Picture 1 (cartoon, protein in one colour):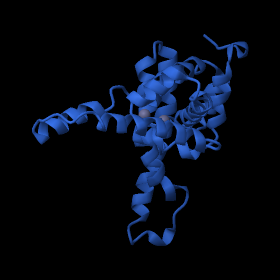
Picture 2 (cartoon, rainbow, N blue to C red; picture 1 turned 180 degrees about the horizontal axis):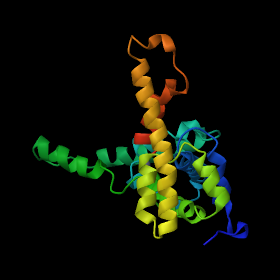
Picture 3 (cartoon, rainbow, N blue to C red; picture 1 turned 180 degrees about the vertical axis):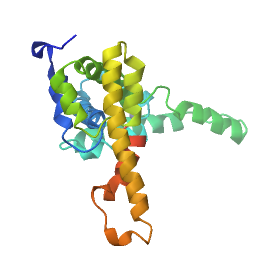
Picture 4 (cartoon, rainbow, N blue to C red; picture 1 turned 30 degrees about the horizontal axis):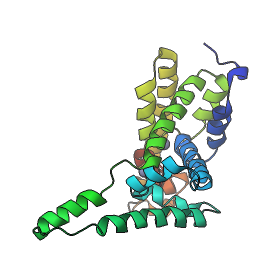
Length: 229
Ligand SMILES: [Zn+2]
Ligand SMILES: [Zn+2]
């Protein structure tokens, strides 16, 4: 089944737009997706009462997502408001009456009040969007233009490759996905082997070529781009 150009949507352009950049296009796409999410949270947070309650109960974002916040423009006031909300709530929990109990029990009771009672909202959103974008990737693999552009990219990191394998449902998509991954992973593996060979003092005079940063690209392929899940 060939994907007609008319059925392409925004994600087609979003994924192919990242294929010319070195690294996993899906990691790059998710980076953009999460920044758009952070921007919308910042814009709507003050008026969004349920979102404020969720954020307090989650005790803010997890460490990885929290450090997305200062990377975006115009978020300083929003960051201050979110954290003011959380800290007021934490202080309220600390301030509850102290019961005449042993310190260990008092500390445990306080810990129970302080610990997050729900998951990081950005993690929940990211999981959902990871599935949406992976399903789009698989749908577009039938489109010859998409397959050509993806084949010329760095390929998917292992995590996004695994994601795609979770959702693949037909032979043609599976074969296309494997062709892209086998080619990109074997190219990288050969570059690593060449890097290791040239690191030997007997071959150092040859100097490094494109394999010079293969060790860094390998981290991104095996563990995902920096900041990615
Ligand atoms: Zn990735
Ligand atoms: Zn998170």
